[in-house]
Length: 377
Ligand SMILES: [Zn+2]
Image (cartoon, rainbow, N blue to C red; front, side, top):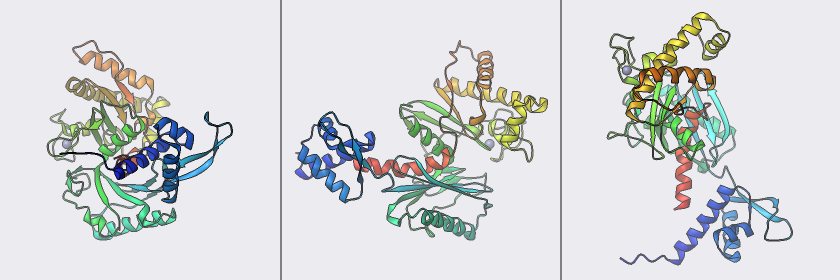
């Protein structure tokens, strides 16, 4: 079949190329665009006018350019032409964030709401989301979508929770939210969202095992720049690998899963916060030091086991990540060295570059990515 390009496609391509160029270079002149994209000045000028009239770009001061003697008008995209919202549903709180087309935080809100599997709860959460959107002054058409980061496995179409035993919401449908919201909504497995954030922050990241060291343990495998999903749409679920057959009871109903030894819920005592724990640790409180030493040994065993499966970088993320120090990573390497049959280089354990709010940002990012992909096609 003859697939010749029509004049309309060329026009669309030029427009998308120009938008993409401005997006990536942030603040550019008409002359820079024409030179770097090998387009004529009238073509660039016409597209800039059209993009500006559509509200996608704006004039943004003047900049030096090597092509004209005086300062040229600078163009930048309008970062909040479209936005998306990420929401995290936890047992005792709901966190939400609005991000712009650069994935940057516009604002964030947290509410101390106890999860209940009742319509009154879902209605209240949706009312808070609408309030959040209104408080930022955005119109409905600016919202690309709302991503809900959930502590559970999600169906491939992102509409159903396939396994959500932490909060007993297995089978929950996205309609419980969409019936109260006028936007496209999706569920995302929380650890997948965290890994999406990591990838967005580090575009050169190709392969890694991402470990979310949160109240519950989670993991995701990044392979060839993509988050690996299995035959049934699941991301990695190593948290339920049994490491101590007679160990503590896991929320999945089995005993001694990785979650029961490598999660924050396994590390902290009742009513102890992560901050309390690490303050005690750095002040050399003996009982806290003992718990931490034990935790690192368990974590080293898990990393070693997974490393034997997939020889790649390991990114330690989640609530523990901001507190990790070089000395902790050294302990992990020393223990792994004792466990592994190979002489390993000590260069594969990294700490997350975005340990704060990564889950909610990652739940919002797929909508931003889809908008940008649409523009570049
Ligand atoms: Zn389990």
